[in-house]
Image (cartoon, rainbow, N blue to C red; front, side, top):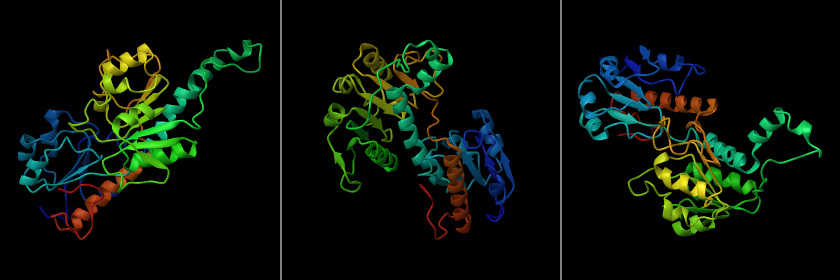
Length: 330
């Protein structure tokens, strides 16, 4: 089959495009079949004829890859690619590319949506007003909880890549001091940002926001011993990876008052079980891994995937093409 006439299959399209984006630019490359969801048993039959495969969270292991002899490119519609067996793909000559940078603004915005809900309780106050509580007040105003100012507080950032840097700039605009812990402080230095060691990050932060990728070295880094270093008035925000947090330790810290609150967009298991230990915990806000999912960010993601496919096709099947992929290429 000529690379000029690729067969394209999308195995799990729904989270990228639940219906508000157009697939026309993808279809322009060649015959395209789009599935919103695919079960493990459906992957190989659906992808059998594909030369180009788009996947988000579908797992492509060596066994599946060996059954796809026509496959030349896997375009991951995400930044993370741990669902792809890269060694097996390379052995078969299958190029793998991911997408980076599409959600920076949206995730940074969500960090502060979570933080402001913890400090200002806008949702709770609005619900109270709609229930008639304001109409019953003697005074012109009331509060359900103390309202906190961010000015002068310290924003601690664990992982200072694109998103961490964006969070730092917004924090500075709020009048916060910014400290960070990062592998490459010299390379990623920013005006007004002070890099600190890990214990100092936990001790000094009034707000600790997590933005490092999950590795075997930092899995569960938010644990009982590190939580014990934090101020009782501090907040934890996690829009990174759920595995960075030991959830039972966080629950204990929140319930004991060792930590003032947490705002989480990710959990260790997604979707979480119905009896997840953080459900119902006071001062714990949980959103369903949608920090990245603004329409603008999803359109950027789709555009990057399209650019990656175009670059691959220009390379005549070896993915070189004289142009860089917008992410990883294996």
